[in-house]
Amino acid sequence: MLLNSWFVGVGQKMSTLTRGSILQYLQDIMYELFELDRELISEEAKLTDLDIDSIDAVDIMVKIKILTGKRIQPNEFKDVRTVGDAIDLILSIQNDVAVQ
Image (cartoon, rainbow, N blue to C red; front, side, top):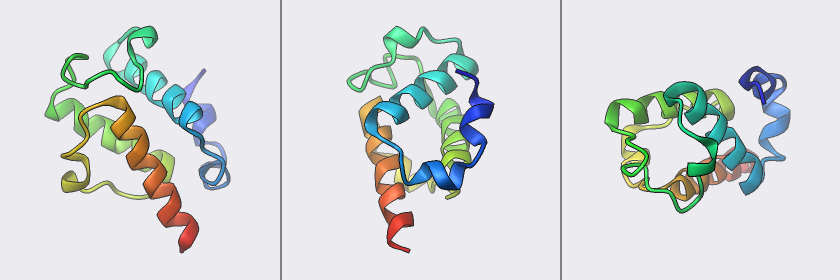
């Protein structure tokens, strides 16, 4: 899947994101940014096991901002240890946007 297709109508897609679609998005961006095998990127995968460091995390935060339209504060991302944690963060942003 090309990431550009994710960015068409992001505002509309924001309300329809699921755990599965977010996982696929994270697999896509981690493949494109870090050339990681998509099969290694599961909800249980620890970012440290994927060799994702703090500088890489900033790149991921930028991609999450593009998806959600909300800037992620470093303190919001500091507790993200696994891909599943990143999915939970995106879902919480989705819920915050839906409430507004």
